[in-house]
Amino acid sequence: MSRNYRYLCSLPIALLLSAAMSVTTGPQAGTDEPYAILQPDEFAHYIDRFNANDDQSVVNLVPNDAAWSWIAARAPLFTCPSARFEEIYYYRWWTYRKHLKQTPRGVLLTEFITPVSHAGAYNTIACAVGHHLAEGRWLREQAFLDDYARFWYTGGDDGGPAPHFHKFSSWVPAALVERSRVTGDDALLAELLDPMIADYRTWEAERRLPDGSFWQFDVRDGMEESISGGRRVQNVRPTINSYMAANAAAIAGVAERAGRADEARQFRGKAEKLRAVVDSLWNADAQFYEVRRPDGSFSGARELIGYLPWRFDLARSERAIAWRQITDRDGFWAPRGLTTAERRHPEFRTHGTGTCEWDGACWPFATSQTLDALARVLRGPPQDAVTRRDYFEQLVTYAEAHQKDGVAYIGEYYDEVTGQWLITGEKERRSRFYNHSTFNDLVIGGLVGIVPQEDDSLVVDPLLPADAWGWFCLDGVKYHGRIATILWDRNGRRFGRGAGLCLLINGKEVARRETLGPLRVRLESLEQ
Image 1: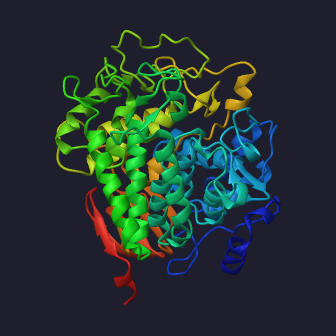
Image 2: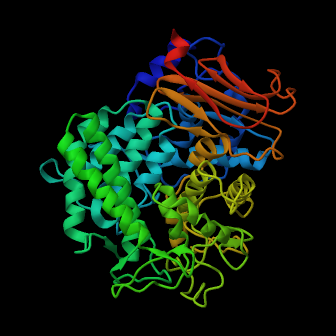
Image 3: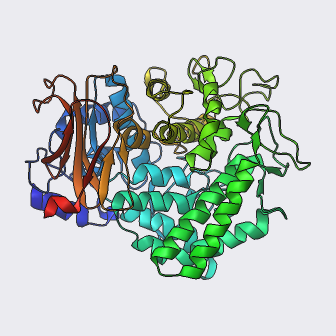
């Protein structure tokens, strides 16, 4: 098994098309096998069910009959007491794999499973690239994400960016840096430094105002038909300004590591100036970050995008009061998930249905960003606005939303009360398997709690409430070239390895505590 597994992982993904590709289960502690606790065969039934419910009208790089082999060779295994939650974890790897596409530019990811008119080459769309990188960074094979990043920055004419890269604002440099904190490898960042700098300057030329802020149409944020904006309204939005601040900080860090002090200093300055811009989007009366109109006035609408400053570490800690809106029934809380606009607003859900409304319905894209931001709040300075229970309940609600007609499903957006997916008819075929959000990143980095570090250390800080599940296990995470396993067993009876939270590296226990809470290990010290 060991030799076969290493051989498979060394092959280009384009060759791994055959259903005959096999991955034997069952690692042994202390070896270089990917799983120390869980057995892949225990979870194959989920993929069998997904395959049985799928007509597979579109086949990209990895067909359904090779899906489980592909997942078992690359993805961490996860188990928990909730079969429904566990099912959605595997469903999201199953759908992610559907979007891998072999092209002359390498292996790329699509957003819609069928071709759409606003896509560029190979049916690629720039809007959710940050989500694609966040989700995929936890796979043990990363070559296709290298292809994907190179495509966006060098896949255009004369080695320039793909021409449709700027159809949507995004946080790609920041996402690439966050990915490197999982892999421990920043070679691609160094390779793409100059293209990232050039791309940033293009954004400045296209969207920067004289006061240093950035404007964007809501449709170019991928958030059309919003309460605060419009498809042709040039608003100063928390989205693009948070993205550009994070991107500037990311570029500065890459430049510094590359020994390019001038660029590092320049982009750190840009990041700090944009921090002040984001600060100016705080509406003290509403106690929330809001969109500013061209005349400088606030939009007067609390929208889920107001949490993005926390996602990128741009918000002041004393402003955590804004997070009370996610538990307020007149704010963003709804039976089926977080609404994209506050429910008390008079324009809530007034834009119709079926035209990509961001005026209140639940969008997985925004839910992903918001829960990512919430995780950072919960690990930050003490506050009394939200708890780990809030994170857990919203993540479970999000998992439960992944269903339609009794089977696992992910689409574009859905009704906040009924859970009904709101793209129907002919458009529904393009919407199924919609690759426009994350879920497994929220499980791995949030609930289970792997907090990637720049140095050679590993931090685990689960957001699971102490009185929730009695056990879970995440097994086979490749982190900085090692294989990590995290298990929680309140009474020690589930996994037979004692009670408490336990961290294994390459099958060997390296840290433990009796209760849920932070664990930290220096990886280099384990090899001395």
